[in-house]
Length: 126
Image (cartoon, rainbow, N blue to C red; front, side, top):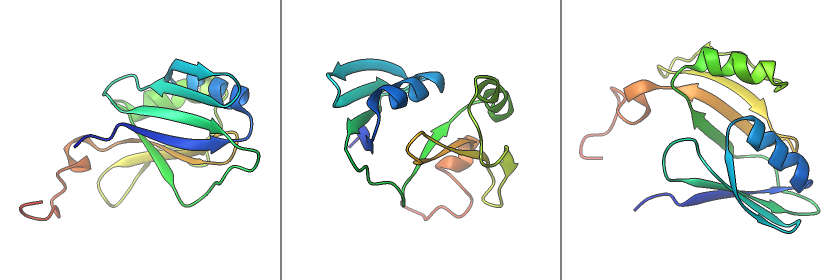
């Protein structure tokens, strides 16, 4: 099984498309003013936006893994992206920087290396 896509609700499709393009996603589908779909720079999972008058926000964090967190953070900051937290080493052995999209969805830019899937506390046989 593979994760095909994640879809979030947004209030302003054009503004959200601009934001997600700015952070490096590639727009592949645009259906009028109600839906957009992106490819990630690497991998096969896609990401979608669905217009909603009152988007549901909260409780979910979208994680975007990058090879060089400090460089990507600097690049995005230079492109006008405002971060809630700078790149910070976490006690779960990876570094992350948090920010939000125009609707307030929480996003996390991170680098975990092999600990993303294979931390020392990984369950055996899992």
